[in-house]
Image (cartoon, rainbow, N blue to C red; front, side):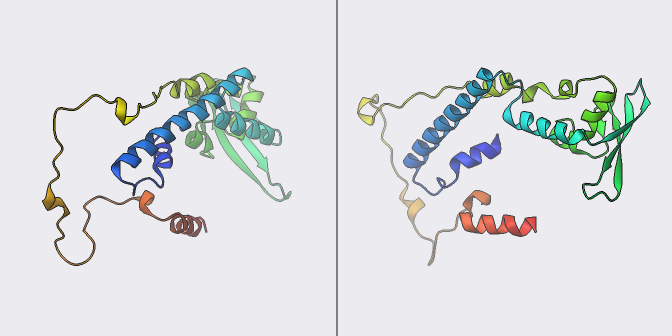
Length: 206
């Protein structure tokens, strides 16, 4: 969720306070509207899992067909799964323990979605691997995430009168020396220009 908030605020950090609040409200409202529409579409399609989990699980199901399973223990529901190289040279063997929801490849633990090895092992044990998908990936949970409501803001002429006066502190605008004012705010990746952030990301990937 923090990454989603950062995406909403991207490009708005340098604005004055009033436009900053306005753009944050408008972007947040649009963000929720778009995802509510997406959730309604998934419900209409009788889709059990949100798009991320659904697409990842479908792709891993297709990949699992080519795996070879050797069952070892029914109580632990453990098996070794052999994956053949796409080039036809060599193979790899992974250990799957369904009762512990574990595979030695690490993808199941990382993504929360059963990996292709676990899916194929589940088939051999007569189990449905989709039952291992956590409920927070469900369409129902996705829709509940965006049940929050935003209200339109009335124009300033409709605001209630205030009974105090805002007084600016002139010392806050006094320069202490030549050059730009020194800020004490901790900078993060949102303060970087788009191009620089993209270049750093590409360099990290290589």
